[in-house]
Image 1 (cartoon, rainbow, N blue to C red):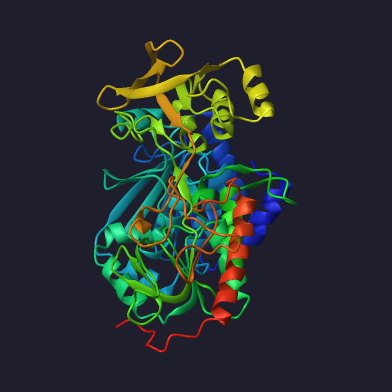
Image 2 (image 1 turned 45 degrees about the horizontal axis):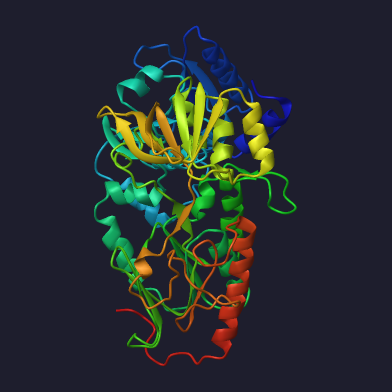
Amino acid sequence: MLDANMKQQLEAYLQNLKTPVEIIVSLDDSKKSQELNSLANDIASLSELVTKVDYNNDSLRKPSMVIRGVENNTKMAFAGLPMGHEFTSLVLALLHSGGHPLKVEPEVIEQIKNLPDEFEFETYISLSCQNCPDVVQALNLMAAINPNITNTMIDGALFPEEVAERNIMAVPSVYVNGEVFSQGRMSLKDILNKLDTGSAAKQAEALNRKEAFDMLVVGGGPAGAAAAIYSARKGIRTGVVADRFGGQVMDTLAIENFISVKHTEGPRLVSGLEEHVKDYGVDIMDGQRAAKLIGAEASEDGYVTVELDNGAVLKSRSLMLATGARWREMNVPGEQEYRNKGVAYCPHCDGPLFKGKSVAVIGGGNSGIEAAIDLAGIVEHVTVLEFSDTLRADKVLQDKAASMGNITIIKEAQTTEVLGDGERVIGLKYIDRATGNEKSLTLAGIFVQIGLVPNTEWLKDSGVALSPRGEIEVNDRGETSMAGVFAAGDVTTVPYKQIIIAMGEGAKASLGAFDYLIRTPVPTAAAKVA
């Protein structure tokens, strides 16, 4: 199952095991079961601390493997073959079950240990989903810490009956104790906040005790990471507060225009960014959403103040706004009702759930045509609806789409309604703008790819000047209209929303902020929030 190179790498990882681990396999006569059995044998052959156990009981899905930590009786399961993006989840499950130290704060470990109830998680994924491993790994980590928690990764493509019965049309979809828990990407902190209702107040209390920063970055995407690194390299106290580190890049599968790197993937790039930022001792406050900004001139102590959703207050001499952007929605009837029930925004994540079905892609730019090309290899047919009379995608993408036999492109099409049967999407309505006629399509899924919306709603009444499109207005040094407040990346008026441009703008704006700091006296008021 594993080639020689993967075996060599895995053997090196398994040398970190401290305690015995069992791989309990449940198999049937399918080809996937044979592959999973081969994988389990390969793993067991690489370490004396790993034992394979056959357990063909009907209580377990087939094919599946349970990774059991013998010393603490911890369990995490994989229903399906955990390869592709999920191979890392499998490796971490083995290491954590075998006593390898967890890379998580001691207070988080204690919080997980002290959860009072039993939680049986089931996480439906697709192997092409780049967001799914984060959820699987977070839940597996919890299972490694607390034996009252279990998690099973379920490959939806191998268990279509379950997917249909539970009406799952987006991944990752998480169930706990048989009930829906969440859909979409979640961090470990997000999960704990949902399970432990008192955690938000505890986090706010800890954040309130932090001393004022010299530079506080709001946003953890490429622009925010670059700004934090450039700031910390100047030797000043730097913090990053972000809803999720990595931002929208975490949802990007293939990156092929990052200069000097021929190919990478969003999660891999974000992992490198986070590691780089941490190397400089930056205080990363992940899983936190900014709610209000008060400028230094309006505050009582002369510091820029950021209030968070959980009620915490952070202060800084200077501020970098790098909150990025999110996918634009169609804003038509039925879109919200059928979100994650056929209306999707990530073709890489959710595409496999529509195998053999007809879908639509809304938008004829690069993202839309790339999505159509990706989906065409999975689904029966893709219809692209473009509002304009011309496609905006690069010619190479248009040529590729034209060469595929199951992509239809409709121009001058204005989507007017998402149609559903109460449980899932069954089609859409659109107006032919050339004739004014209303038409409809029968579909199982709709993938929306129509551009970005800046994440600036929380700044509307702050005094920071925004463009008519809601973007933060900046000058050539990254300065906003508010003293001491800078901005960079996709949230600003800087054109061409690209990862490499966002990084450059983050670095430039950070240098601008440092120049501001050395020319501005330190506020004399107390810097700590009571």
